[in-house]
Image 1 (cartoon, one colour):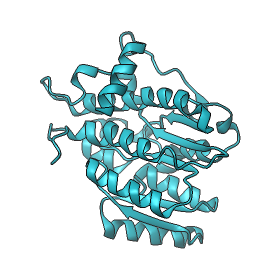
Image 2 (cartoon, rainbow, N blue to C red):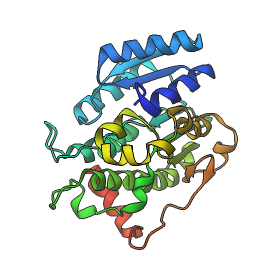
Image 3 (cartoon, one colour):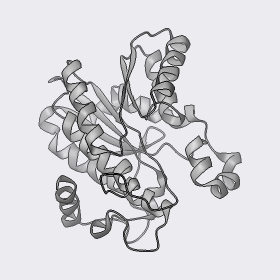
Length: 265
């Protein structure tokens, strides 16, 4: 998710810190154009990309294999790819596209790469959304089959799922010295929000953050010493925040385990 919006801003900031970057993107021409822009802006030549549609599990399997075959280690994995769709559609593999892109794809890529981190420790940064505060996870309707379909609701549920996975991975990966955090970038003026939620965009346009501002905590979680001292937290503006604000949007331990089992299946 590094070719536009928050992801591109984060990629530029990380390149300025001399990171060696691999961006996963759907469109080869756009990926090459962004790669050149990052190199020219930062002077860091260590930027490459791989092509995959992260809503397709077969693509994820192939790109994970390429990463495993070509990279000695992965120090930081940033799961930023995501989309909000206003109509319910299914991918060619039969998954509802919001679920596939924003939750199942993140789960699958991370699971395939979780043994690629160095023994000295690695980090996973999962980009969620403040929208997740409005929804709990519905383990019995992960693919949003119960009508009526609402894109913002499906998106919020998936982003709630990302926060739940963060806690589960944090517990599971302690012995691997991998820290796992999720974060909310704030409401950011990106092409995605303007396209998917034009009414919301026009209503709050004057107070939206820039992509650079939205990317700040992503980069901080990836690079700072302080962020490596804890795991399993949800962050906004470099500060940990609660994950539940409204009644009935939290989940039980049983729901967490059922989510894990369903994603595995």
